[in-house]
Image (cartoon, rainbow, N blue to C red; front, side, top):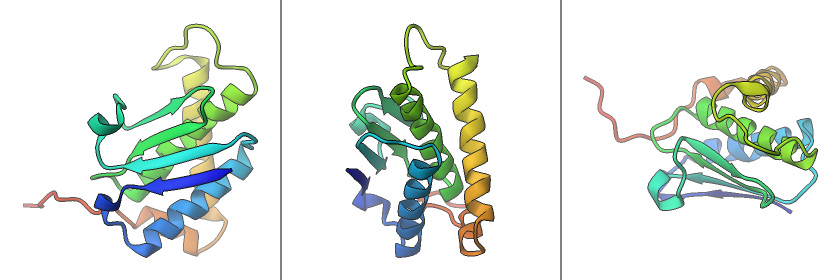
Length: 142
């Protein structure tokens, strides 16, 4: 069971929702993820209890990624990063005290996320649009 949940208050256009869904399936196949996964693209870190822009719950198959005020490609990179942690969990690599910055586990997630983004964007012309799209924001430019 693979599920994607997107907070309605993000008011994402249909094209971005389609890109998100397509990218999540691409990631799941690339890594590969074999367990059930629930991916939440959310508008509030506080409401979902995540301390940064994204989090993975080991053993639960839950990924939460902040979507509000972020470019689509950054949201996708966070999804790939957290799904890499899920893959690490599936293969038994998430054990002991894991550094949240630097270290083998985090470095692998960062590198793999960048690689997946590039593979995805290069796989078709339509997919290159992830670099142009931004999630709706309430920021005003001066």
